[in-house]
Figure (cartoon, rainbow over the protein chains, first blue to last red):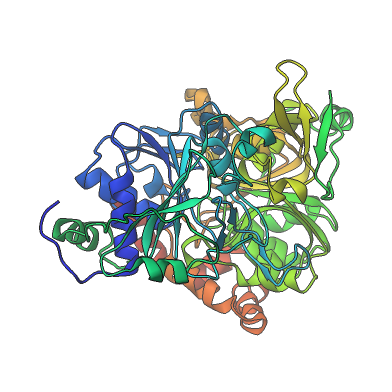
Length: 258
Length: 325
């Protein structure tokens, strides 16, 4: 990573951190928004052989332009296959999808997500879009990465509705519920920090690293549950000039997301 | 088979695979008959009050928008809707046509939460809601297309999504693992927009196939809208491209730009300006009604809609799709 720069938005650093988490030669289930930008950035700079899979059938597109919807033509532009939703979901269910990206209105300490309702189920205070593919991605991909704005309204002790499974209520809970063995959340990329999970003992969320200029205390204050904080919390490198240039000039020149 | 957990949600349309077989035996002709009709007749005949209805693909992508607008124009009451959608279901919600939802996702993708969905569900005007995951809904259609009453799946378990659904968790009698059973979804009618078909309904789509294969086979009645009606000889030259054979189809409606303001891969691009016009209008009930008045109620048909959008704009969308190739 080359020269650092200090001027960047919260969305830009989330895209860059998520892009650096991608691994070459793997498959990743991608939804609309930040994950598309991160996958596109990763393909250009770090992981040319990252194969993106879109739920309505796009497999391995070359994302010259950003898709605006998970089924639109840019989600399979010069792709390797244009299939359908049963095929992509069954591919995940068979264990072929390494990473899945998720988002939500709420996340709890075990990485469970809510995209269904705020308040009671029916009639709700706020009706959100629903699971969509979220529950399936959280159930069937090997590892998932959630991308979230970091504040106490979103990082909550308990989700109003558990739409998408994280580690449910702790060690062994996913397997006990019947979910595929060895799957579950890997990271959360927030607007303040990179978080992970204590996969040795509690399966609760841990603080892995903070962004430049963000204190551990700031992360704690913006989290509605107790985070596991290691003695040493590193600070991540800021977005590089190359990352920002690629993102702004090539990937999202119309500034739809960043 | 040991039953472990049951969702408490209402099964909005319990599947009856024996009745479905009987229907397919007695109500679906095997003859090659001309099924071309206009959108008014297709919707009048097959979209009835209280019917259980689905659409494919969705909202901004190969969506049956011209048919969705015709449904709004004819105002069938108390629709029960299989809910995977963007603009098309938004229009029905805003028009107050929806009584029950089997929902997995209704939203506006990059533009966020659907205001029409919020108004209708939070007010209780949509009286029954049952949530599912996207794969669960697609696999429910797949079960119906297979002619079996349910399929075992490995998502939804451990979550509130399961608790409010009508799925059941059982112990698999072969391996002993837990699996989630989702019931077949047999629709009264579905609407699919395709790139081309012949007058009998033999249909092909380009690009991703979404869930067209499954929903076409899961429906008692199927209305196709199509960019182009081609000679059967075109179909016979590449029969491997036929995703929907004619015997599934009840109506063929010619609808160039039928997905507008959504896209049709290789043919025309999304009309971002018109999509945003709906999203802005949908923010309040009053503006949404004004939109429906202007773009739906005041127009007699899809042809009049296209004239309002204008040839210049449509030509530009074709050029844009060409540049994406």
